[in-house]
Image 1 (tube, rainbow, N blue to C red):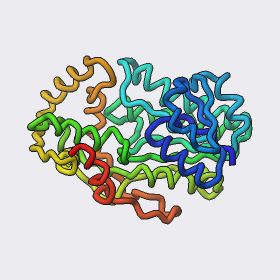
Image 2: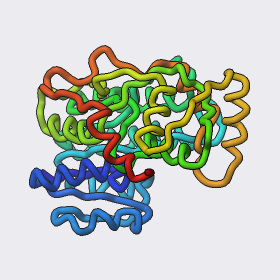
Image 3: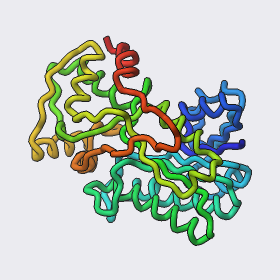
Length: 306
């Protein structure tokens, strides 16, 4: 099949595309920053396209040629705005809406969209509310076209060798004697990036998965504090993890937001932590998948920080 992957140069995208190529698919990856996709160039059936994925003139000719379109685009931070800020709106609402419209226009066989666990219209964070709006736009557009050949996945926080989750905590432990964190009691159910990639490829083009919304989570639930402590220990630098009161944590996040570069934490991230990121159905039963435990993978790749 010809598979168009939006957001293919990112963390999940690199793992998904490697699996797609191994399965014999032809993959197109549009990217505004061509250099970010260079790691994909050695893969024999991958074609990079230079262009802005938020522009219809970039996406339309690629969608028209695709059998399957996979949208992986997501951002963790946004400038302030109503109802959820312009960066969240652009990535989580406008882009999925445009992709859904193009998929209906060109009769693409299957549209697979990656959302997030915990989304709802009344979620405490703008991130989660904007993700929910993106899901709603997709479903409404397909319904108006009398089509239902979409599938939505809602993964928990994703871990894997090149993640910015467990690796971040292990890296912080290298130079901080004590790890002070807000939201340490929040519950999460991390899912392995390889399982996310496997789930996406398993549903592609399969009509029994059309019109379905699936959670993706790992086999175990942890508090954020437990995950930070494990990352520090597996990275060779065990550290005490001290939970911060909500007011102090919000001040910490406010300060981190003002640092140059991508912030380590934002106030909206803290709002997301008010909702437990767990699922009663961590893997779709129809996929017959056993989720990979964190302990089976993370200690090996975090050893790089020793």
